[in-house]
Length: 298
Ligand code: HSE
Image 1 (cartoon, rainbow, N blue to C red):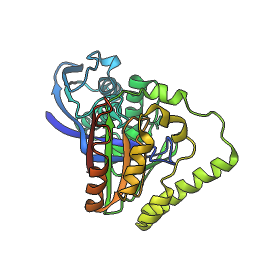
Image 2: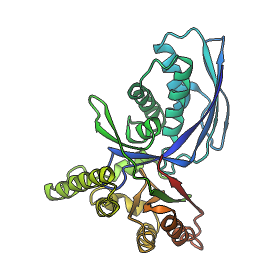
Image 3: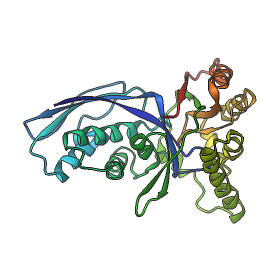
């Protein structure tokens, strides 16, 4: 009747795969607890690490659990605590971690009646509560783990992709807040066919690289000529950090989700450490606090 879980941070977009690719991170995430209650309904008794609403309808996690209990016609309730391991507006899928964790947790008390795909849909509802749109890339990565492709939104289809053994993430989070909604407002609404061809060829290359464990191909394909140029101006020193990561041996680097976190993918622990060392102090003396970390993709 009691459950404690870890729900991971996620990197969405992954350069060329805007709104369609994502992966889960094992070094950073939320801790959540769930207690089954005789009284019906959902309660959030504690939130630490971020200033989030306790009102169930306004909280991504609370809204998800409420919807699931209603849909399952449950004759019990759930009381939850949420301990955020990273902040909203970081570009690491903060609301997605809470929403996907909530869906997973509630499902344990519902005899696992909902599939991973259904849990992703519930969690997308939580994303809508938190940021206004039902985007799947973060929540699917948090639900399925590893690397995922949102192959289609209507109907929702998620493909789990392989993760090459030595793939590592290095990320740096400059502590400025970028709201996904604002970062979506700067996006182009039309793209030239030539650019679309480059972009979808890179998506294909990245996926082929994941399947064949071809790190060089992964690196060549980690390119985004459509979204990154529009969004990078929201992130101070983006070009410098990206170049430093690549100079230190990263396969590629880009904006994590809608930013401001900058991610780099690397082959092996040694290179990841070099990249970490090369970027961890990049915001020193800029007046912007920043935290960097290394993680497996898991
Ligand atoms: N794919 C989304 C975006 C992720 O970049 O806007 C943030 O929710």
